[in-house]
View 1 (cartoon, one colour):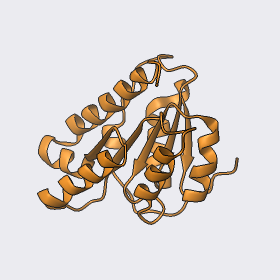
View 2 (cartoon, one colour):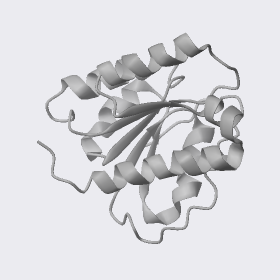
View 3 (tube, helix red, strand yellow):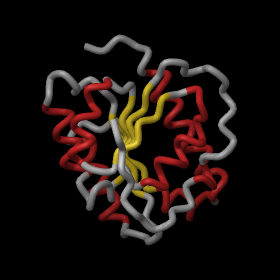
Length: 167
Protein backbone atom coordinates (compact mmCIF):
# COMPACT_ATOMS: atom_id res chain seq x y z
CA UNK A 1 0.00 0.00 0.00
CA UNK A 2 1.38 3.40 -0.91
CA UNK A 3 0.99 5.88 1.92
CA UNK A 4 1.19 9.55 1.06
CA UNK A 5 2.01 12.04 3.73
CA UNK A 6 0.31 15.42 3.84
CA UNK A 7 2.38 18.40 5.00
CA UNK A 8 1.79 19.38 8.61
CA UNK A 9 3.24 21.81 11.08
CA UNK A 10 6.11 20.50 13.17
CA UNK A 11 5.05 18.78 16.37
CA UNK A 12 7.61 18.14 19.12
CA UNK A 13 6.45 14.53 19.38
CA UNK A 14 9.88 12.88 19.34
CA UNK A 15 10.81 14.75 22.49
CA UNK A 16 8.62 12.41 24.46
CA UNK A 17 8.78 9.31 22.31
CA UNK A 18 12.56 8.89 22.26
CA UNK A 19 14.23 6.22 24.31
CA UNK A 20 12.01 3.23 23.56
CA UNK A 21 14.00 0.30 24.92
CA UNK A 22 11.79 -2.76 24.97
CA UNK A 23 13.45 -5.14 22.50
CA UNK A 24 11.28 -7.62 20.58
CA UNK A 25 8.58 -7.20 23.23
CA UNK A 26 5.93 -6.61 20.61
CA UNK A 27 7.17 -8.76 17.76
CA UNK A 28 4.39 -9.20 15.19
CA UNK A 29 2.30 -6.36 16.63
CA UNK A 30 0.82 -3.74 14.32
CA UNK A 31 -0.09 -0.18 15.20
CA UNK A 32 -2.14 1.91 12.82
CA UNK A 33 -1.23 5.57 13.33
CA UNK A 34 -3.70 8.03 11.82
CA UNK A 35 -2.27 11.52 11.93
CA UNK A 36 0.19 13.81 10.16
CA UNK A 37 3.36 12.41 8.64
CA UNK A 38 5.66 13.85 11.32
CA UNK A 39 3.76 12.16 14.14
CA UNK A 40 3.74 8.90 12.22
CA UNK A 41 7.49 9.03 11.63
CA UNK A 42 8.20 9.83 15.27
CA UNK A 43 6.10 6.89 16.48
CA UNK A 44 7.86 4.62 13.95
CA UNK A 45 11.20 5.85 15.26
CA UNK A 46 10.14 5.36 18.87
CA UNK A 47 9.21 1.71 18.34
CA UNK A 48 11.94 0.92 15.82
CA UNK A 49 11.75 -2.35 13.92
CA UNK A 50 10.19 -4.23 16.84
CA UNK A 51 6.70 -3.32 15.72
CA UNK A 52 4.91 -2.78 12.43
CA UNK A 53 3.67 0.82 12.25
CA UNK A 54 1.26 1.63 9.45
CA UNK A 55 1.07 5.36 8.93
CA UNK A 56 -2.10 6.80 7.48
CA UNK A 57 -2.91 10.42 6.70
CA UNK A 58 -6.36 10.20 5.07
CA UNK A 59 -9.65 8.68 6.10
CA UNK A 60 -9.82 6.79 2.81
CA UNK A 61 -6.45 5.12 3.46
CA UNK A 62 -7.36 4.49 7.08
CA UNK A 63 -10.54 2.57 6.30
CA UNK A 64 -8.62 0.34 3.88
CA UNK A 65 -5.71 -0.16 6.30
CA UNK A 66 -8.09 -1.68 8.87
CA UNK A 67 -7.92 -4.84 6.74
CA UNK A 68 -4.40 -5.35 8.17
CA UNK A 69 -6.11 -6.03 11.52
CA UNK A 70 -3.96 -3.73 13.67
CA UNK A 71 -3.52 -4.50 17.36
CA UNK A 72 -3.94 -0.81 18.20
CA UNK A 73 -5.12 2.33 16.44
CA UNK A 74 -3.67 5.66 17.51
CA UNK A 75 -5.57 8.60 16.07
CA UNK A 76 -4.78 12.29 16.35
CA UNK A 77 -7.52 14.86 16.69
CA UNK A 78 -6.29 16.72 13.62
CA UNK A 79 -6.05 13.58 11.45
CA UNK A 80 -7.17 14.34 7.88
CA UNK A 81 -8.61 17.77 8.63
CA UNK A 82 -10.05 16.78 12.04
CA UNK A 83 -11.70 13.51 11.01
CA UNK A 84 -10.71 11.60 14.13
CA UNK A 85 -14.33 11.20 15.23
CA UNK A 86 -15.35 9.95 11.78
CA UNK A 87 -12.63 7.29 11.86
CA UNK A 88 -13.47 6.30 15.43
CA UNK A 89 -17.15 5.90 14.48
CA UNK A 90 -16.24 3.76 11.46
CA UNK A 91 -14.10 1.43 13.57
CA UNK A 92 -16.52 1.05 16.45
CA UNK A 93 -19.64 0.48 14.35
CA UNK A 94 -18.13 -2.25 12.20
CA UNK A 95 -18.34 -5.72 13.78
CA UNK A 96 -15.08 -6.71 12.07
CA UNK A 97 -13.07 -3.93 13.73
CA UNK A 98 -14.87 -2.83 16.89
CA UNK A 99 -12.63 -4.96 19.17
CA UNK A 100 -9.53 -3.02 18.07
CA UNK A 101 -8.54 -0.59 20.83
CA UNK A 102 -8.44 3.03 19.65
CA UNK A 103 -6.36 5.61 21.49
CA UNK A 104 -7.07 9.24 20.62
CA UNK A 105 -4.82 12.19 21.28
CA UNK A 106 -4.43 15.89 20.70
CA UNK A 107 -0.99 17.36 20.11
CA UNK A 108 -1.57 20.83 18.80
CA UNK A 109 0.62 23.61 20.07
CA UNK A 110 -2.13 25.57 21.77
CA UNK A 111 -4.06 25.23 24.95
CA UNK A 112 -7.75 24.39 25.11
CA UNK A 113 -9.93 25.17 28.08
CA UNK A 114 -10.73 22.59 30.72
CA UNK A 115 -14.29 22.23 29.43
CA UNK A 116 -13.18 21.73 25.83
CA UNK A 117 -10.57 19.16 26.85
CA UNK A 118 -13.09 17.24 28.94
CA UNK A 119 -15.63 17.40 26.12
CA UNK A 120 -13.11 15.88 23.71
CA UNK A 121 -12.36 13.08 26.16
CA UNK A 122 -16.05 12.40 26.85
CA UNK A 123 -16.84 12.30 23.11
CA UNK A 124 -13.96 9.90 22.42
CA UNK A 125 -14.96 7.57 25.25
CA UNK A 126 -18.64 7.71 24.24
CA UNK A 127 -17.67 6.64 20.71
CA UNK A 128 -15.65 3.70 22.05
CA UNK A 129 -12.06 4.92 22.38
CA UNK A 130 -10.04 3.48 25.25
CA UNK A 131 -8.72 6.93 26.13
CA UNK A 132 -8.04 10.48 24.98
CA UNK A 133 -4.94 12.40 26.00
CA UNK A 134 -4.10 16.04 25.38
CA UNK A 135 -0.33 15.86 24.92
CA UNK A 136 0.04 19.63 24.93
CA UNK A 137 -1.55 19.70 28.36
CA UNK A 138 0.68 16.87 29.61
CA UNK A 139 3.80 18.69 28.40
CA UNK A 140 2.63 21.89 30.02
CA UNK A 141 1.90 20.21 33.37
CA UNK A 142 4.78 17.73 33.64
CA UNK A 143 7.43 18.78 31.14
CA UNK A 144 8.35 17.10 27.85
CA UNK A 145 10.28 14.13 29.28
CA UNK A 146 7.68 13.05 31.84
CA UNK A 147 4.84 13.64 29.33
CA UNK A 148 6.70 11.42 26.87
CA UNK A 149 7.18 8.70 29.45
CA UNK A 150 3.49 8.83 30.36
CA UNK A 151 2.40 8.68 26.72
CA UNK A 152 4.77 5.80 25.94
CA UNK A 153 3.58 3.85 29.00
CA UNK A 154 -0.03 4.24 27.84
CA UNK A 155 0.83 2.86 24.41
CA UNK A 156 2.86 -0.03 25.85
CA UNK A 157 0.02 -0.91 28.23
CA UNK A 158 -2.48 -0.92 25.37
CA UNK A 159 -0.22 -3.19 23.31
CA UNK A 160 0.24 -5.56 26.24
CA UNK A 161 -3.51 -5.62 26.79
CA UNK A 162 -4.09 -6.45 23.12
CA UNK A 163 -2.68 -9.91 23.92
CA UNK A 164 -5.82 -10.59 25.92
CA UNK A 165 -8.71 -12.32 24.16
CA UNK A 166 -11.47 -9.96 23.01
CA UNK A 167 -15.19 -10.66 23.17
